[in-house]
Image (cartoon, rainbow, N blue to C red; front, top):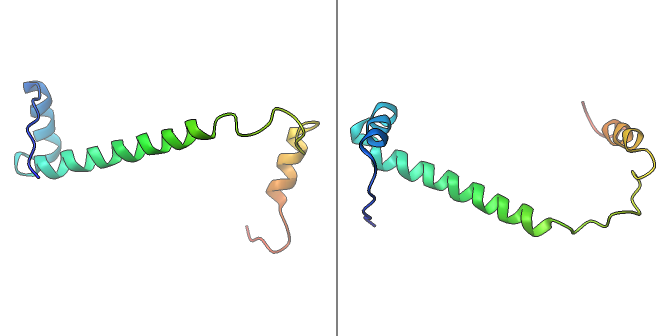
Length: 79
């Protein structure tokens, strides 16, 4: 589908330097895809805000020890 987008001359010049005049559409399409993916991730993050209670977690008393144990993991893990 074709759309019309108005851009400042300076922005188009930078676009041409980075993508080339013959690759504008592909470059802009890729940036829009990335932007939409970022927006979706932020939507997920914002939807998850407040989903954990403020207390009652294994890590409440000593977060550093809890993190260390998590990093050690089980003997089945590699690395």
